[in-house]
Amino acid sequence: MRRVAAVDLGASSGRVMAGTVGPSVLAVEEVRRFPNGGVRAGPVLYWDILGLYRETLAGIREAGRLDGVGIDSWAVDYGLLDERGALLGNPVHYRDSRTDGITVPVPDRELYDVTGLQQLPFNTLYQLVAEGDRLDAAATMLLIPDLLNYWLTGEIGAERTNASTTQLYDVRARTWALSLASRVGIPPRLLPPLRDPGTVVGQARELSGVPVVAVGSHDTASAVVAVPASPGTNFAYISSGTWSLAGLELPAPELSDAALAANFTNEGGVDGTIRFLRNVMGLWVLSETLRTWSTSDLSGLLTAAAASPALAAVVDIDAPGFLPPGDMPARLAAACGATGQRPPGTRAEVVRCILDSLALAYRRTLRQAASLTGRTIDVVHIVGGGARNELLCQLTADACGVPVLAGPGEAAALGNVLVQARALGEEDLPDLAAMRALVRETQEVRRYEPSGAGDWDAAEARLGS
Ligand code: LFR
Image 1 (cartoon, rainbow, N blue to C red):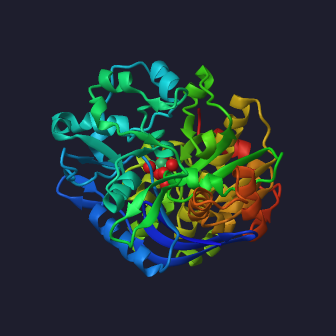
Image 2 (cartoon, rainbow, N blue to C red):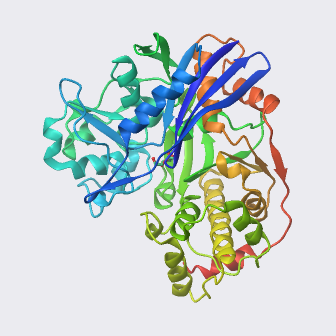
């Protein structure tokens, strides 16, 4: 039996979970949870990286005796270190506006050919270009989990799954795309040696030397490890949190013109898998709406939304206007108006509009994923916090027309724990299939059948082209 700590840092909260793994045993228990989010200071939206480090250390200490520690977080963001290893400035939030209007002199087709990544304005590539001559003082760029691993162990490196989200990683050669970096003015010296998920990074000096393991340090990579898919099923997944990452697991990248045009990404997963997916704007739109209203009564609003008329108004939830922080209800109303729909009137109707629009986006995205790869989808797994949102799970089953299997809600932490356990020698977990079998055996999963409700084609048509 192994006992490890999984540190899972999300955009709106972080948690330290104590995980226990052994034959037929997989359990996680929350030790510490702390808020996260952007901190606006002057013109810039930052992360509170030192606060996150302090909470991480406190949580690991509270977890007691451990065989290992692993850290995963959201992707793309980073800290720059100088030659001494000191942090040069506070890491900036990917929702900051500094990448607005930043372009690079490399055709999209070529960028896609090398990196396989969807164009998102906040990809590390664009953030580093936006730094301009601030890069001159930098010796190394470390993505958030790599930065925390460095502070814990003194070891510098870049874990592969997260490196694959930078748009500076060659998805086929599985190396940094050094010549691409040079061409866009990013010094290759910034890109540290790559490390595989499942390798020991070093010992945490301040934590009695406990081994720190590189897990799938991109939270989505860890979450997809814990998708409880049965062998041989044609499954899609939605990793549902601040973002909804909706797509397929593939053995190799899909880099066709059609995939490029549909802006699908090929992110690196654990054990060399590829996550072929699109970022759907996710529960961010709902949490920003609640923030705008200064309410935290999510469950009351969801009950009222379930009783509101279905598909009364829908928006293209992936429109770039929903990306930055701000007044979401006003943006939703404007988007409804722009497509000739009556904007939602009550709060319950606003919430219903968000959830209907999310389900519509899942349907659109998963249909595209299937057609771009020539695969069929017989079941959709929803993992992450959104798996607990019963209305959203039912709407997803209705929109996609296939059963939804919802859970586990703590998929990222479970995937983190599983990869650590294997790295530390747990012999029953040789591959993803064995890890997923253990998740199936031990975690609660709820099934939602499509009810046939809703004219989703007509709703999609209301959005125009
Ligand atoms: C999800 C996630 C997504 C990534 C976004 C920004 O938490 O990691 O996969 O696109 O956050 O980093």
